Image (cartoon, rainbow, N blue to C red; front, side, top):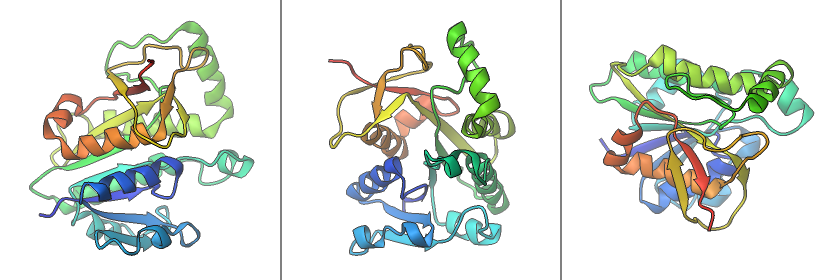
Length: 243
């Protein structure tokens, strides 16, 4: 099967970098975007780009399964807009609901080869599969955010869906959840470090992670089988390298 990738959240700040990176590596890309977020003006002349204009939360699961049947990998860069409506409006569980729909669609297909699922998450979410011990100050603030900011809960539920519901031995799905720290915009890929767990306080000592570096790492996970096997079933953290 042709190496083809489905990208969710492709019109977002990181998602656009992901699409560009995949296309530069001559991979076929299909995106699901709202009519108002179409990327066609940017990529319409690239034969490897295809676009479905729909909302993932209302997209029929049979249609989604048909799209995924053509793909080896699903990359999810969905997130909440930094506005009152984006943070407190519906859907409050945008990411986890989309992820659950994706994994249900993959399971329905029962493909012989496992489908890779790559989720963009955050260092504010712990990997409870390993012995991570965030600083007390971080835990206190995260606890407050959990009560006041729906996106925090959404991110935690999305990670837990992969860890608990999909797990390490799913017959049709394998996954990686990528955790950047404080996201920034940069125009070019720079050096970055990947660690199994955060090495900084995500609240009071956050490091910078450029969106284009996150996109590069997720593309490498798609392309490099050795890298994929290294991080499969884990939640690697990505930091810009301090020079």
